[in-house]
Amino acid sequence: MSLSKSELLKAYRKMREIRVFEERLHQENTTGDIPGFIHLYCGEEAIAVGVCENLEDTDYIGSTHRGHGHCIAKGCDIHGMMAEIFGKDSGLCRGKGGSMHIADLSKGMLGANAIVGGAPPLAIGAALTAKTLGNRGVAVSFTGDGGSNQGLVFEAMNMAVVLRLPVIFVFENNGFGEATGHDYAVGGRDIAHRAAGFGMPAVKVDGTDFFAVHEAVAVAVERARAGEGPTAIEAVAHRWYGHFEGDPMLYRADGEVERLRQENDPLKIFSQQVAGQISVEELQAIDAQVQALVDDAVAKARAADFPALESLLTDVYVSY
Image (tube, rainbow, N blue to C red; front, side):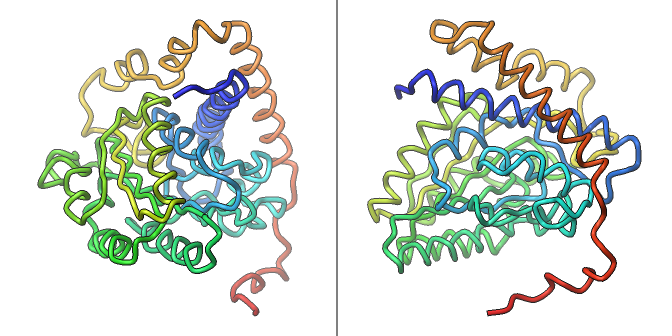
């Protein structure tokens, strides 16, 4: 699939934003100033960006507890995200959602979700709305390999096929459902093959390869917009950090993460793939810009105000 240079630079910037954002949170979390748990996305950047570069603001995504990468890929404001994670009033959800419930409906980001397998039911709701309105909208759900075993995920896939909904089920197989290995927990081992049993096209791709993800999703989006129904995509890319920050990762082999960083880094792979089109200097310039952006986001988040006490009971119920 041919992408313009500007599109390639945009994709790299998004992946670099995710990497720097997450690595910085890994550092900031040690200070004790971030409330609640955070779950980092490093190692999976090519999946979120490969998916979302095929979408519009008017399309919707449903995320997981590991949602920062999905937010950034969908175009959410990094300053607003950082403030939200620090629990500040200037955050995307006024500091009330935090890391695991961060959302931005203006960008089609339905929210991170602490319910394992919670995104597919939300995504088919958004897809049903798009089909009913006839606006050619598409919905995408992100689910982990652990979440792929949930009954509500199976129900959502079945309903999507029955109603021929414009939805894409993206399964991020990062090797572990919390601390349980994929090969132990997924009976059939192949998530895509199991999804195909519901009657939809299903493919398995290298989740460290932006182009492999982007091409598979482009085909799925085209099908969905044409009214041809759902698709499932399993993208394999192991996470580098623990299930949550503070996870000792005793379930991982010695040297495993170091090997992944050296051999399976989505940004390194992308840089090698575009070497003939984009110079090292151009990529380094983006790196510096992104680092400055994240530094500024952290500084402003730390300086921002917490929500006022009187706002405690607002934003609880929707008023129509």
